[in-house]
Length: 159
Image (cartoon, rainbow, N blue to C red; front, side, top):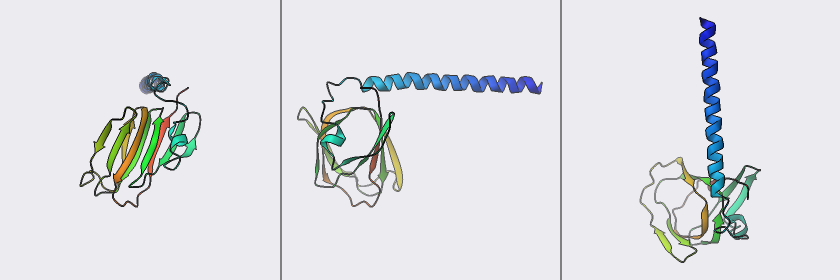
């Protein structure tokens, strides 16, 4: 009896592994589909090329690229894009959040006012980001922060 139960557990684990691997393959195909259309992502405007003062590559291989993103208050990050889907990791230092103007290529501006209190001071926040076509970011004001810079983990897809 023990042997049959062990065999059942092995089959269940194998089935779970196959299901997880299948889901990963399907989602990977979906993620790569986001990064395939080059019309919104012109050459020469990749964040690292167009905004090297604020976007630095700290790790890169065939699958991912990790960017360190540092933007000082009172500065504007020039027009650039992020071609691949990514995870944005930000340290929540507590207190006020930055006041941001998010400028799109069509000239429209999204005003993101600061808030008085962060939701989880002293913790990392993680946000899923779809590929971002051409945009510029202006930081109007930002609280003093001794925390680490933001990290953007881009999931690379074939061009």
